Amino acid sequence: MRHRRKVAKLSMEKSRREAVLRNQAKALIIHGKVDTTPARARATQQLVERLVTWAKRGDQAARRMAFAVLQDKEATTKLFEEIGPRYKDRPGGYTRVLKMGPRRGDGAETARLMWV
Image (cartoon, rainbow, N blue to C red):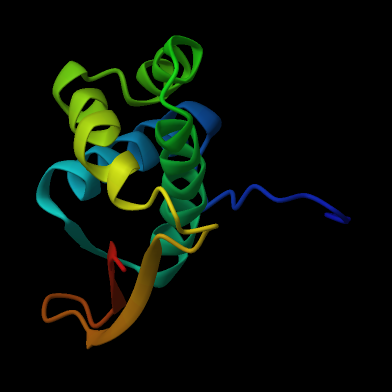
């Protein structure tokens, strides 16, 4: 049973899942949008919401926690200097997931994760 379990496993082992979510979070921070499957978009959305909340705090401990997740100086800097202040007055819900329709190659459903 998976009662009260919040992690979407996405049919991957933990290390691969963390790498996929980390890379998608970095892409969203740097490029502003990510096209992926709806399940991956929702899982990435949870991670990014937590990162933006840390960026709103703006202290050194929050910066270190965000860097531990992202493992990228450029993405961490942009998160804390641009994205965190942009959502300073917003209590949550920094991203949205839009359904995009089937992917051309394999027909899988796609979704776009983007900033509000």
